[in-house]
Image (cartoon, rainbow, N blue to C red; front, side, top):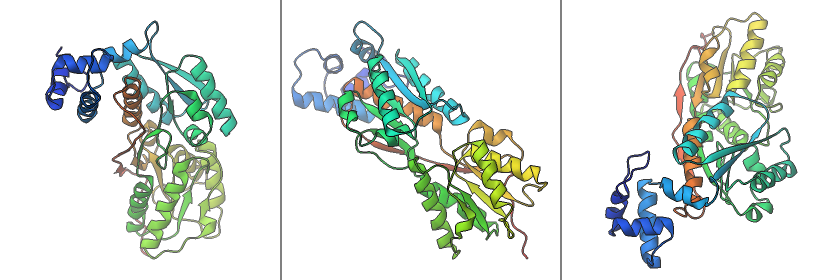
Length: 345
């Protein structure tokens, strides 16, 4: 009766917090006994407060098969996706659940709806989403029809029909841009990424707010709004930006892959980084610290966010959590060699 979850919280601790017996907590978890509605609500509140997610409850939900969490992702492998997979597997393995994947190249709402329906038909009891599938499914008529809980990570905003686990993207980009401005840079370019991702608008807003706070004007020719969150798009953006007659002294990118592409193109042109060009990224995937120069970035804890989102799904499956929530993780600015002060003219 004193079994623990991976956070070290025991069922007895839940009972003490709720003011009931451990047996009552066990009955509430397993849907047994005759606890009153008020007692059930009190026990569930204690479980949520302490972060207790019972393994046995998750297993018993499945009856004749393992409970399954489905993950929607793009068929393009990235370090970001690798971190998501590790976090999701940590959570599902800890609770004896299965993780099934569904990949697809399309990012339209129709494609996302079909993928979600396919996962549920394949046995998924809950869905874990990453951008842009979270944005494509939010507000869709099929969400209530799926009949399973949804959780999304790394979105730019909260979403009314699914749990979201994210950072404050606007504040993060405002802070990062402020570091670049503090280094004396005034002609600063920005590579935004594809607008179907909700983080793109939030990060761009943070960049523009930092310019405004410093008394700098937005220069449309220094903002690259097209492309994907990938290396090739970073190269293409750098080719245009670095060919301007008055080229930027810094390029801020909204993903590590974009920044890596910018660094590669700058090196091809013979620029010395960071002396000739400051470059920053976003996410702090393994790529950020493996290229030269290592990237100054916003770090969002993708693996931990995926772990937490999967925990929320498991709690929803165990009826320990109802409704949706929006959890905001802390971000950090990782200062590395890709950023340098701009010499005074």
